[in-house]
Image (cartoon, rainbow, N blue to C red):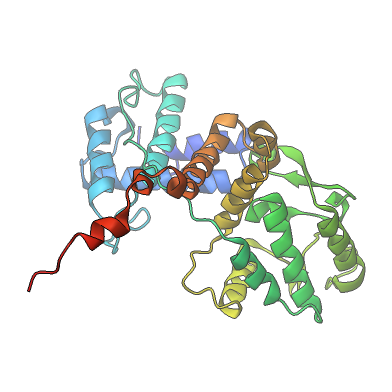
Length: 324
């Protein structure tokens, strides 16, 4: 059976995922990762048939991604090699695909059973400081409708840690006095608390600064051409970054999420509540943020507990004569 094509295994896998109500971003991610796999199998391993794929072929594909720069599914050279964590994302999708093929009895053996993903990188996720946040908020012109809207969006990101797509999906009816209803990954709905000051500003935005292009517009955040989408929201964040003079600070939509999680824990919030508010399916996912938090706290206490504190450095330097 062919991997690609109208009657290929990949197409039928994606079709089944769509029937199971997988979200559009999930389907796009699956398709991208499987197109990369198909191209790698064909160009690196000279394999085009589903039944021909072995764990050796898949390991060759993993090694290629770890060592060769690629772009999308075309395998055209690019400047950078994928990170280990990105390669792990590819392997997860490949495993899901071949497990599905095995269950559908398209193959007799699942070649991913013995496929081990590369060891994950443990990097401290970048976060914003209170000073960064204040500069970004101060760059918004509250005398204009758009400036007030951007101000509220920033505060909502900092206050809730919700994803960019979740902000775009918010509707006016989702805003309550003390919380917002959020529709997250896996089509799961959850309630996320909001600070009283943010609640007041949301109310003011809705009733004074929100001017939709069409009557009856249901989406909360709108622009001159209609509801805000992810690209439009990313452009707003980039514009705010430039206006606030934070060009040397790493700012991305997920940085706001990391910042919220870290500050939530620093202020005494518990991990289980944080996991629910962030929309994680398992608390083990949220523990990643706890690792960053613990590392940061240990660094702040370093001066107090460093062995260097027991040494009289001034006396040591006085006893050292400069050689001429």
